[in-house]
Amino acid sequence: MLDVMYFAWVRERIGLPREQVDTEATTVADLVQELSAREQRYALAFADLAALRVAVDQELTGFDAPLAGAREVAFFPPMTGG
Image (cartoon, helix red, strand yellow):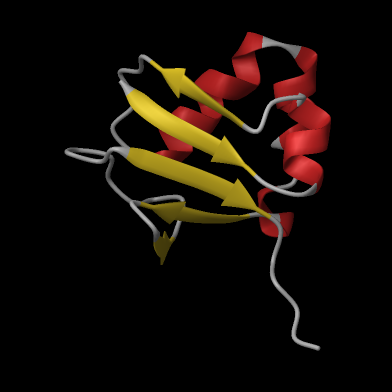
């Protein structure tokens, strides 16, 4: 099982702050593909990957990052300074 967390507008589009996912995905990109195929709300949230950032086990990474041994994946929009 993998804990998947959604932040900001990603959470708003999907309608959940977090969920546990049973997945066969080997990379973050594979996980995004699985989630997007679930329902329209996921497809909308992941429609533009350039507008998303991802962290695996609380470390910023890319969508090609492997999921082997990972416990948590978080999706969020890019952060801006202020």
